[in-house]
Every structure is written in C-alpha cells, then in structure tokens.
Length: 383
Image (tube, rainbow, N blue to C red; front, side, top):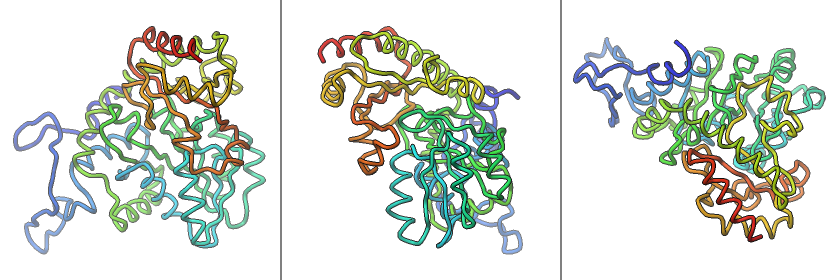
C-alpha cells in the first residue's frame, strides 16, 4: 500500500464485536485472563504496559516510518527521554544537534547532566564536526532536521554513515517534516522520534510522542523504558491521534503550499530583514532540502527590520495568526522562540547557534494563503 492508503488503514480493523469502523477507546486498567496457564493469550494484561487503542496507533506509525516497531508516549519529551534513558548511562557521552528544541536542551543540560552523562551540542550540518566530536564513550547521536527554530538541515545519510562506522545509534527528530516528506530510517538512521502533538494530531487537541526503531533490539529497549517509567500514551489521546493521522498527507501538502506562498511574500517585503524556508532557492541548504526530503514542510521564520522591538509589535498585533507555542496544526501559529519555546537555552548559546532575538517563527496552517498574507501585510505596515 502507498503512504496515504496506509495512513488511513494500517493498524486498524473493524471492531470484531460491533463492526465499528473506528478503533474503540479501550479505557480500561486491566484485562481479565482466561486462566493462569493462558496468561497473556490475548496480548494484554495492564494498560501501563500495553493498550489496544495505543497499539493500533503504534502499528500505524511504525508502518509510515518503515520501522519494525513503535512505542507511543504521553508527550514528545517523554519520547526523547525514553531514548536517552534506554541508551545512556553515567559516564556516557551524547552528541546532539546544536540547534534543537528547547525541551531537549533542558532535559540534557539540567537533568541528565546531573547523573554524569556528558553532552556535546555540535553543528550536525557539518559531518566532519560530528566525526571529530565522537569520543570513546559516545553512545548516542541525536539530530533534529529541519532544526527548531532555525530550520538548519543535517545530512542524515552522512551522519548515519559516521554513526554506523562507530557502532553508535543515530536518532532523528522528524517532527517538522513527518514520514510523508522525510524517511530517516531509509537514510540509515536507527531511531526516529516524533512529537505526535504536532502534525500527526494536527488539531491542537492532544500532546504525545512516538519512537520508531529500525531493529527489534532497539525497540525492546524503548519498550522496557515505556513500561518501567509508566510513560505510555493514554487511550483517549491515541484515539484522537489515530483520526488526525488519517489526513496527514493532505494537510501537510496544503500547509506546505501555503508556507511557500507566505515565504515568497515575506522575501519580497521591504520591511523584512531576512526569511528562511527550505523551499526558497535563497535557503542556504536548498540543494540538500531537495535531495533529502520530498517536500519542504510548513515552518517558516523571518526577522523584521527593527529587530526585537519590531518583531514583538508584529506578533502582538497581527490578526488571524495565533500567538502560541505549538506547531503543525490546522490553525496558523506565530511564535517568539527566545521568549517561548527556547527560553531554557542560555542567551549566549542561542546567539551562537543563530537563534536571534528578533526571530519570528511561523507554523503555517490550512487557511487560505491570501488571508494569511494579507494579515501579515497589515501587521508589517504597523511596525
């Protein structure tokens, strides 16, 4: 089956009791067993370990990413945490993209570092820099591409080649492009992580995370953490995400078309200092964007002339675009990363990696592109 067919049908079957076309919400703690000798004959014992609604979503996402298994979690950060907890011990070293979601940075520097895990935040767009950063105790490489919020790209095949040669698992945060546009496991990555909160849900209704593995060995390690820490996704969230995933491809295609239109408008506006969108030929890594992915996504960032003051005025006054932290939803959102999503990152570190104070991040939604552009045009006229 092709992608769009699988996103609708994979992992779900009509309910055997009622014929319900939607997977039921199995809102249950425990499962009655037929006998001691047939314990787990039906596959379930306790919903902290596994739940049929969650299992349906896990099967679907594993199929879409081309992995052997998927584990779903209560949040995207729980998913990132599971990877670190499964693969890192005290004294180990982890390489992470220097531009990364603020929560990932916070988890690394303020939690795991307390337990003797070392981290190097490396420019993973430079494969030579990654190779040079590998130490004898390096046990994990985590890349985020496109990076949040600068959209800097990492050549996944190049980093995977380095990781394979060193015997180090390579985990990729694929939240921004989804498996519809980018397939890290096909580029020899070992693990893919998602905040399902974003494009998989697509409707600002849930928070969740997912980890998809290329091998059974890695999948078992992630499952162990999911069960041991009690961080499995709830059946209610899994049910809602199952419905969101069904329209993933049509949503992200339209959102990407809108993003291109918005980016082109901003690039030609006399009050805009700079614009970054992987689909623009002016994007510094345009050729890699075309080579590595089949689409450019729906995230854009720009800087207004006048810097932070002008940017804040625009974000506070623009209509139609909601000032909020999420991304990937049908509603268009506008965000100030320095104040919101990346506030946990030290100011000097933010500036070093290009997260400038005046950076305005856009998550482009499904509205008519003309309306989105008109709203930005009106707001820009006021700054």
